[in-house]
Length: 93
Image (cartoon, rainbow, N blue to C red; front, side):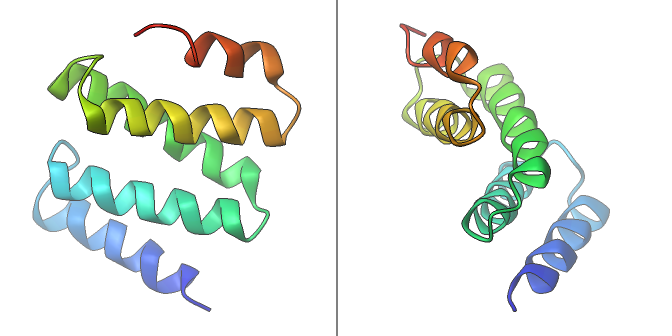
């Protein structure tokens, strides 16, 4: 299973590069996607939330990567029945 490798990768990125680096954000997103794909949405959602917060802060709300992060989080919210929160994310940034 790839998830332990993605978890270690994120730990390493945080330790080596720091928590506030684009490569760390990408690693976190990859792990969140793996959790989502494995049906582990309770673990994926906090990572997607953190990524959206970080991408919005560093890139701005309308940047394409930020918009992808919004879509990822909205999809995860929909998958767990949090449709009102998902709808807010699908609105204009």
